[in-house]
Length: 468
Image (tube, rainbow, N blue to C red):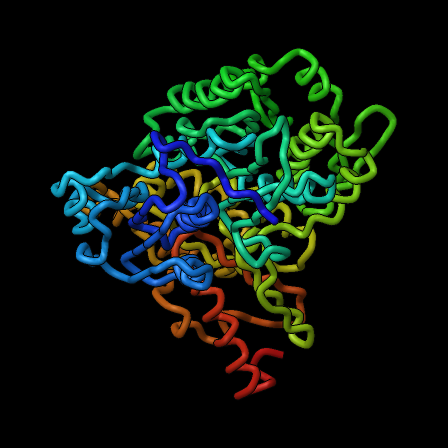
C-alpha cells in the first residue's frame, strides 16, 4: 500500500485540508493535484479548457470543471494557480479578494518537494525525456519511485507514476524541474540534475548569463539540503564546478561515441536506444544517476538501450508501409531542439517533410534567424511547411515585428499553410521514397499531426494511386 504523504500544516495542509487548483489542465499542475490527493487533501480543480490531464483528475475522483466558477470553490480552501493564470482570472481574483490563502504553483512545489527525497531534473532541452528515463531506471533498480514529468510515458499511460519507494527514510520523487517560469528555484531538491543550459523563454530570462545564475542557484539548493548534483556531458562549468569531486570525476570518465551510439565508462560500452546525439548527452546523465544510486551496471545498460521514450518526442503516430510514409509527432520548439531532432531523423529516411509550428511570439521573434538556419537545410522542394504561429500567452501588440519576420517563412524555399485541409496530394509527393512527415511544435502541432493522419487515410481511401 502506498503511504500517505505527510504534508505539514504550514505548507499545504493535513489530511482533510481543502485545496483548489486553478489551471489544473496542464501537465505539471495536474500531477501536483495527484500528489496532493495522495496526501489526503480534498481537491477541486478547474481549467479554462478541457484537456486529457483534467479528465485524468476526474478519473481519479477529483472534482473538476471547465471554465471559471468561483462559487464552487470551498470558502476554507487553500487556492493554488498555475503560472499561466493572470491576476484578473475570475477564480484567482475571487480568492484573493475574499482573503483566502491564494498562492502560485511555486509555493505548492516547495511544500510538496520538501516532504520527499526529490530528484529534480532541469535543463533547457531534454528534461522530459531524461526525467522519465531516470524514473524508469529507478523502477528497474527496485526504488519504486513516484514521478511527475512533463509528458506522457507510454508505460504509465500518464505523466504521473505513484510509487512507495524511499531513500534516506523519505519517499522518493523524480520530478521535471521547469526553468521557463523560474519555478525550479522553488523545488526542495536533494539531487539537482541538469541536462544543459541554453537561452530560451526570453520573455522571462533576459540573457544567458542570468539564466546560468538561475541554474547555479538551483544546483546550490540541493547542496544546501545535504544533497548532490549531476550534469550531462553537454553542461558547462556553471554547474559542473559545483559538483562534489567524486561525482565530477565520474562524469569526466564517461565518453560519448556517436559512431557506436553508445557511452563508454572504463572498458564498458553502454549502447543507447534513443536516436540522436542529444540523447547520448541525456543518457550520460542517466548513467551518472544510476551509478550514484548504486544501480547495477547491467540494469543501467538494459534501461539505456531499451527505454522507449516519451510521447511527442520523435513519436511515431502512424506508419503507412505501402506508401513508405511515417508520421512523427515531436515537441521541438527551440532552434537547437529542431536541429537536433531533424539530425537524428535524417539518417533514417530518404526524405523529411517538416511541418513547423512557431511557438510563442517572444521566442519566434528572438530566434527568427536561428529557426531559419535550423530549417533551411531541409526546405528544398517545399519540404518545410510552416503553420500559423501559436501565440500562447504573448500579446501581439508587444511584438509588432512578428508579421514581417514571419513573411520570410511564407516564401521559397519555405511554404506557409494555414490548415491541413489546404494540402494537396501533389504537394506531399509520396513517390516511393521512404518519407517521414515530422510535426514540430509545442502548441497545436500535435493536433495538426493527428489531423494529417486522418487526411492521409482519406486520400488513400479515395484514390489509392494518388499517394502511391
